[in-house]
Image 1: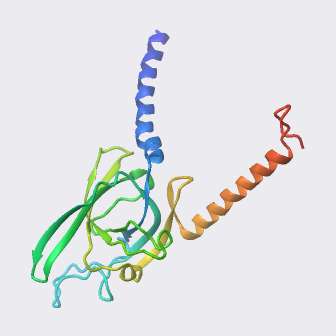
Image 2: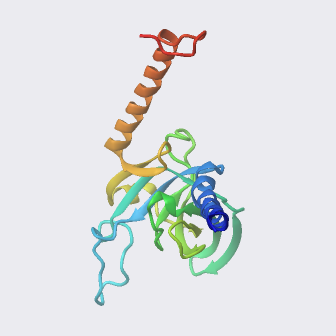
Image 3: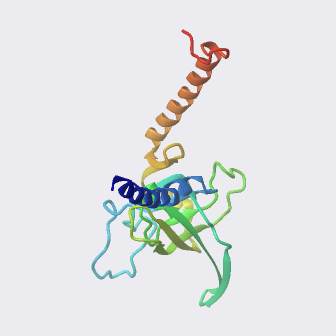
Length: 219
């Protein structure tokens, strides 16, 4: 009887291993593209919930209450080809560029409408950083499980600049590739130094104390 139960346990274990491979390992190892992501800081943002005399609510600028969390070096996946469409408006002919990409929920952020993303960054292209900022217009969730993927649709912004967004940044974060998590800048710097120190110690132990004949570390 125990043998039959063991077989059923193996089948269920296989299912869980497959889910872990798809939603954890695969999310870590697929080729990614680095970007700067401006995520709306909901608790710190001041939303106007009443009618305004001057017009619509400003998303950027000195009269806007929106606050951003700026995330550096955030990897995104499966960026699709940018599609271009033209729209005739009062100010003239507007060219709209749209694309989609994927972010794993493993990173710990939930994309929101009107989030901003910049595919090229100053430290990647310090002399030719002329690429536009995109606005999040929609999101799709793959499945209702603990591990999932967000498919995000974005459209190019016509007038918003990175300088305007940086003026409303509440906190800055960075993606740390070693543990696939988003940390504050001081914590990311500390973890990077700690990782470099561990690599140096590992190489020194290997070169000084490791005996190739026996395979042991001799002190």
